[in-house]
Length: 131
Image (tube, rainbow, N blue to C red; front, side, top):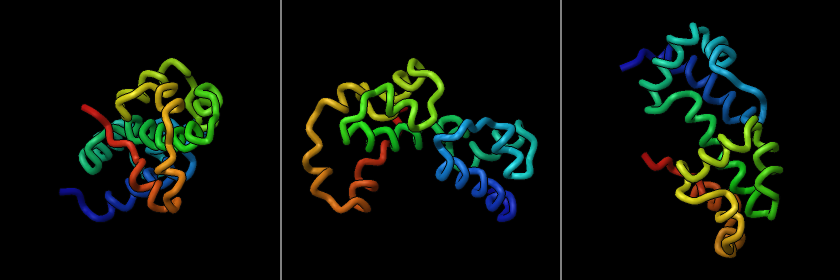
């Protein structure tokens, strides 16, 4: 069990990833936001949230890219817009998180999602990693 102050510091870094997912974020930057060393931050983050900071950030990026792909963006443009630095790593992370490739996700119909209020669509389309 982590103490409340540690959790508050970790939330600062997690909130930064949620807000600035398209920015170049790395563990030292996130650790500084949480007032921790990079290795301590990585251990504490994983203990608190059950995944590494990088995995959390990639899930947020994939989640945001899903919305862009539903709008018809190309895979490359969506990848770039969400801050992924490599199309290859993005394209391999996407199916690991969603269960399908970005182009397969983009090409299938999303009519039900478009009919939902945005707040409901965000919850229902949030990817859950397959492990």
